[in-house]
Amino acid sequence: MQEILTDILLYDRANPLLFNTGLFLLLFVGFLIIYQALRRWHTVKMLFVIAFSLYFYYKSSAQYCFILLGVCISDYALGRWLGSVANNAGRRAIVWLNVVINVGMLVYFKYFNLLYETFANITSTNFDPLDIILPAGISFFTFRSISYMVDIYRREIEPCRNFLDYTFFLTFFPPLLAGPVVRAKDMLPQIKENPVATRAMVAEGLFLIIAGLIKKVVIADYISGNFVDRIFDNPSLYTGFENMMGAIGFALQLYCDFSGYSDMAIGIALLLGYRFKDNFNSPYKSQSPTEFWKRWHISLSSWLMDYIYIPLGGNRKGRRRQRANLMATMLIGGLWHGASWMYLLWGGYNGALLVGHKALKRVWHVPAKLKENIVSGSIIRATNILITFILITIGFAFFRAESVGHIGDMATAIFTNFHAEIAPQFVAGYALIVVAIAVGFLLHFAPHSWQLGLQRAYGWLPLAVQALILAAVLFLVIQTRQSSLVPFIYLQY
Image (tube, rainbow, N blue to C red; front, side, top):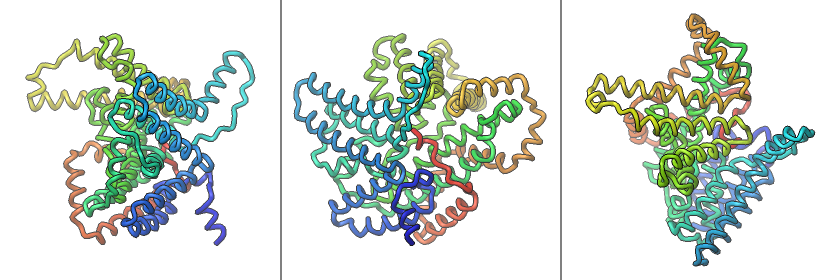
């Protein structure tokens, strides 16, 4: 009994408390029962949710939960201060103080060893990295903190007057570890309303949790552990065809892993009465890199747009400046993902895609008649989608690869050792992998109306039947999950 209590209560670096664990499921059921019992006592309910959220964060980051609490106190105090200052210079200084605090934390926890190693390489000195543990979700809650202060500065929102409200917002556990990047102006009004989940919200939430579990465990984890990781760990051991399939597999894995987390976070929030905006919108249906970044990780893309690209000048200062702003924004977005030059290369690559697309739009226009024709229009759309997917998949190879050398090995294999003739052997040897990839892409490219139809149909079912479907999915998850826990990819960011 003592061992069980220790596992439940104490931090274990090897076993964080995640949405795809049995422990979370059991704890969340108990949490929901108490949450519903406290619905008439708003303050007590908020304190309960904050306590559970801090426990949830402690189980992934141990004592670093005090950093999260420190950010809550700092934001609240600076926000109240900012609201009382009238002159612009003073207001800007307060915002910059908040930025320095948050970015300073990111630099220390995420980038100190990278900068230290780079300095050591330049000066030819020994590199002895510090043992720095990255607090889970630090990139997400610092971005929420910065947006809160900037929105007050822009007078888009009023400073939060209730410390509990702000602490609830910043520590709220569904989006805490890996997003979405929920903004104060969307969340704080809901907190004040003390919302109650409707029958429709519960059905939608359960449907999203089911979808997220299938994406994460049944598709992403399966193709990762049984195929994708092998390719990216040793690309030179495989043919060009296998490397190409590995890159395609990773593009699907990353989407299913990350959008699966977002689905579960949004679904859990719905069960508690809170609604977040969608974070993914079938991104691989995009017909251009620009459209892709409006569909992929929407909360981060829109954050970068509103708080970096537009303040840099956006497209208001000429084409040359616009290109520079796009590139700077994507480089920052790449570096945000972690302490690796590969992320910076990935950001620069995507910046180049956006700049190139803007330039191409100015010089090449498809005649309207071709677009409007059913046959030629369909061919144009399919071609655009295919080209965009190939370009994005190449970028994700940089995102996943250990080094530029591995990218070189993959490219060499694809261009000099492709061996398309092994395709039948590949399908036979990796039959379940091929099925999982095919199902993943079929679900992704299916019309959005199909998903809405399934969601509505699920919502019409009696609650008992909905619970049975959820139980069946949980059984499927247990049968297909890896022997060891596979964390969500974006937990490291």
